[in-house]
Structure formats: structure tokens, C-alpha cells
Image (tube, rainbow, N blue to C red):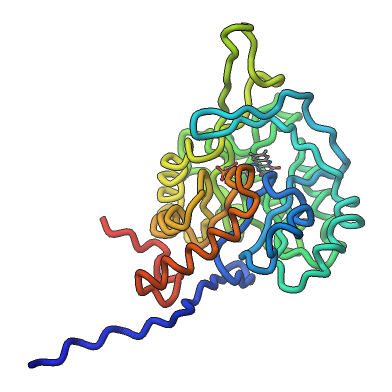
Length: 316
Ligand SMILES: Cc1cc2nc3c(=O)[nH]c(=O)nc-3n(C[C@H](O)[C@H](O)[C@H](O)COP(=O)(O)O)c2cc1C
């Protein structure tokens, strides 16, 4: 009887590491901005060292109090938030939060940065540049540009390019540009970010949405509109990541509604080099760690020796 063909050897410990923008992540699962505090709040619940990395909540040049409540509302398979980018400010983050993270060896910390003018963004980056222990910056471009009548940076190609170019000039670290999904053409915005010097892009941020209390005839959120996140947005996010990954040569970080290991694999097949997990942290603070374990199991079961082999491997 003929011997069966030799199957390729797949180790029980698949290689989950991914590297891009000069950073090595031990696995592709990163906690998303605004859903994981400054990271330190989770240190007693999650083994931060087990994660690929974490993104801090958005940091600005000055502290911000955010919007008045109500600012969170659960929807069918999702969540609305209008936190209003409440944060301690970049300097307080360096003084009070970062030292605790720095004690943990081996945690990739990405700082999410926002502002209302390009100078705000640049100033925040320059403050953060002075600190050690930060791997990269993620620019939240879903903010209204107060100098241009409130039009968001991330919905106008020219504004986006100017912002990315000026932040790139100010930054001493790799720049990840986090795209807004509230645009007509994701490939066009992805291309703009790449042309202006982004080292990577991440997408998606939340979708502008709203909810109404019919009995009271009032909006559910004090700001009236809010950002929709969670499983409800996953299929749209996946489509956008697929389109973006085909439009640019820089790495794409995918996010939007990821709650399981299978979700991670889907985003990677669509072209994501890594993923972020956001809203899932609200119903299970250990979601990121569980997803890392799940992805490892998935790779063993599916005989995937190197997770990077899955990036963009969708068969059409
Ligand atoms: C409560 C909350 C706060 C957020 N704050 C930020 C933020 O400060 N900066 C940012 O770029 N994205 C922020 N986001 C967007 C998330 O990082 C993520 O892009 C979005 O929620 C989609 O992913 P998800 O469906 O896994 O949550 C926030 C999301 C939520 C739910």
C-alpha cells in the first residue's frame, strides 16, 4: 500500500507574531482605543503581556471632561457612545499612567491621539515624544476640525493629507492613521493616508448613529448622535478593511465588532495584518486574552504554522 503523503509539520505552538512599522507584536490582537482605559486599569484582570498590544484612550494636549451623560446606550448587537474624548491629557498620561505600564516588560503601548486643529495633534505628539515606552501613535481623525467649520479631518481628503503629513513631521515614532468609516470611499481615504506618510492604517472607527426614546420623544444620548460599535458593524467593517487592504501597500489593522477568534481570522483573510478588539471588552473585560487563546487554538486545529500566512489569503 502506498504511504500517505507527508503532512507539513505544524507545531503545537503556532507562530502568532506579526511585525510591521518596525514593531513586533507577539500576536495580532490589540486592545482598541477607548475600550481599554489607559491599559493600567486592566492589569489585574488581563495578562497585558499576553496581548499583541494595547491602544490607550484618545489623548489630547489638555485634559478634557467629555460630554454630559447619558453617553452610552446598548443597541441590538451594538453600542452607542458619545464619551466626548474625556481624558487626563498627554502630560498626565506620561506622569501617572505610563510608568505603571512601563513596569510590565514586553507590552506594546500605542497612544491614540486627537485634536481639533492640526496644531493640537502636533502639540500632543510632541509631548508624547518626550516619553519612553510608547511604540507608536494612532491618529484618531474622526474629530471635527474647528478651523474648517467642524468638518471632520477623516472625511476630507485634503484635510486628512495635511494632518497626516504634519503629524508625521512632528512624530519620532511610527504613525498609524485610524480612518473614519463615515465616508463615501474608504479606498480613497486609505490612499490619502498612505500618500501623506502613514506607516499603517487602522479601521474602522465608529459609525455616526442615533437612538430615540419614543415614550419621552427624546434622544437616548445627550449629544443626540453617537458612534455605533460592536457586532452590529462587523460585516461593514470587514468589507471596508478588505477594500482598504486592496488599495494600499502599507499594513492595515482591522477592527469593528470583533468578539471571537473566528472574527480575527476573517479580518486577516480580508487583508488585515493585525486587529483591534473594542466593544467586546465592555461585556467581557477578559475578551482580548480569550481571543488570543482562541486564535492559537484555531491555528493548531487548522494546521496554520504561521499566522502571517493568513493575511489577505481570502480565496475568491
Ligand atoms: C466607549 C468608546 C470609546 C472610544 N474612544 C475612542 C477614542 O478615544 N479614540 C478612537 O480612535 N476610537 C475610540 N473608540 C472607537 C473604538 O476604538 C473602535 O474603533 C470602535 O468601537 C469599533 O470597534 P469595536 O466594534 O470592536 O468596538 C471608542 C469606542 C467606544 C465604544
